[in-house]
Length: 61
Image (cartoon, rainbow, N blue to C red):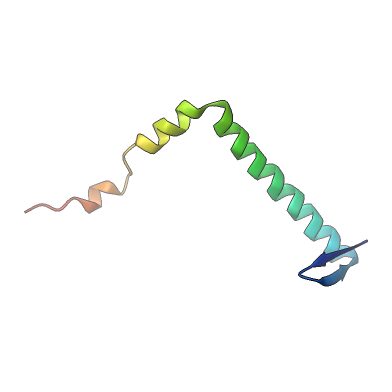
């Protein structure tokens, strides 16, 4: 087994690791996308939540 990365052929075990990592990353990304597709109201609520760091940005005079 070999895989081409940037035009360079990578053989054997390294190719398998690259393919596995690519599949894992694609699966994780698809899960995130599907989670937000399934519950768009949740993402709106998350966006509207105040940041825990906002207290550090308050300027008192």
